[in-house]
Length: 382
Ligand code: NZQ
Ligand code: ZN
Image (cartoon, rainbow, N blue to C red; front, side, top):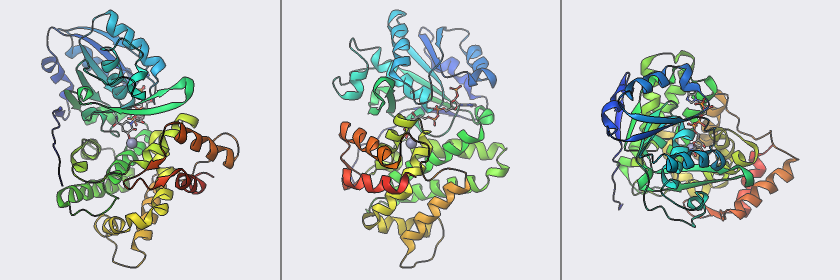
């Protein structure tokens, strides 16, 4: 185990915390408030932001779409440059926060922002970002990652840089009250898979990381089981904090990580607009079965410590079945049925995208070759 770790995002957690931004955004800053399709105007979040910014100079940019596109975000980049913005405030879910990270970095670059995603340009600096989270799922509010889509070419690619990690994040569980059931379920699933990507690999005796990952998985499982009686402060707060902790960086320190489910899932979203979380629940059970020989020991550990199963020869298999049943219980698809063309053309389309993006040896062992991805897709696509 060897790592250097710092997560400097200051978290303001709890009801009423949006007001805190009045003091944490430097008074002289010119702020660009970035948000999505308007949900924040219906749940009072926008009004609270407006109120907190009454002594600041600020502009706003609306319309960042789910799975944010470069095409939309470049309009915000132009505003940031033209208006000499010096602070970005992202108000929304993962898409708005990721999109704001792109804007913050691209605003400091003269070329095409997409160069950040292709690696042609390496970020040197970015505008500081603050995040007000309205949808717990991605962990983007306190991590250095973003995933951006180029609609023109159906490319959905990630980038990471320490300079785009938000300087602060407000996590007020009341902001979740207007979330549609579909998005709440997505949040549980995304946070669950984030934990799995950093846990279901191979045993390394990292007791703290494993133990905390198991705590998060048990929490998320319980929150899923309580879904019918979710309308209470504790349920919302526990989901918001669990999802944050699942991808704040902590549980992934010094341990192998997988992320193949995410990489293949991103292609389903880019091609057919599958919700991010649902792309994961479609791919992951098939991927775990395909890679079971590598992952058997950790699946058995998860079976015992998360699902409370007794030892048996088929414990790893039963654990994957239990994961799949958990998704189904939440109404999440575990097979892709809505795609273009027949099954074979759909699989070929994903394989072509993986090839184009150089994603030809995925997973903690680089064992998911294109051939393995094809096998995984054979079972994941209906
Ligand atoms: O746009 P608005 O009107 O705000 O509506 C959004 C959107 O339609 C709505 N919503 C958000 N908060 C709401 C609300 N509706 C009512 N009440 C509220 N309080 O929810 C819809 C989905 O929002 P979105 O931000 O797209 O969802 P999510 O947070 O799941 O983010 C998904 C994006 O994050 C990326 C995904 O690839 C995807 O593009 N990811 C980012 C990661 C990261 N930065 O670390 C990691 C993840 O694995 C993921 O890849
Ligand atoms: Zn995710």
